[in-house]
Image (cartoon, rainbow, N blue to C red; front, side, top):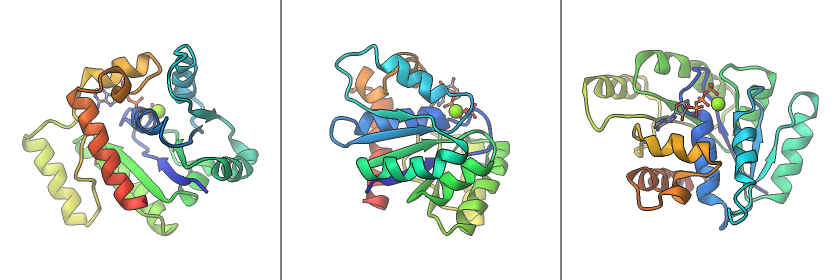
Length: 208
Ligand SMILES: Nc1ncnc2c1ncn2[C@@H]1O[C@H](COP(=O)(O)OP(=O)(O)OP(=O)(O)O)[C@@H](O)[C@H]1O
Ligand SMILES: [Mg+2]
């Protein structure tokens, strides 16, 4: 049975799809990885289409089933894979609720800005009401700075949990995505890849 990781955040552009794609690419090859794209924008499915052009890229299965068939699809994908990563739209709809309910871990990416944190509240509340563990993931984070400090202090005050590993604002994430790959594949020695692997190690520590 797969470990299910759902990436959710109502704020558009927070980094959900980038995170889902890069985690999948880093795990592919050593785990049987499936991606489920329930966002009607289908960005992750497009990424996966580009990936198919790389004959040597480690295989990842992609499904974009949503709506009334979603529950059965989640069950099916869970049976045949080690990890299932679900990318969701920038709003909480019925599908996103089901994806959160099915998750072993909900990842909520946010950029270090108050609107991203405010937008994360709905997803964190939903995860709490479904009794699913959730972690904020700081994305496009500067190494230091007042805004980052302020957002981190707000998170700590509210008692929300954030992964210690963060992702910086790095062009490598966008350029790898444009090729249907992850940063660990396009630039394995880069800072971006090191950040991604640290994030993955922390996630594996939570879900096993
Ligand atoms: N760490 C990063 N460094 C640099 N660029 C990033 C990073 N994370 C995301 N981006 C860029 O930010 C944009 C939005 O990212 P992404 O599409 O992953 O967000 P999203 O939350 O999935 O958006 P949506 O809500 O529209 O689905 C993309 O152009 C992506 O390349
Ligand atoms: Mg997206």
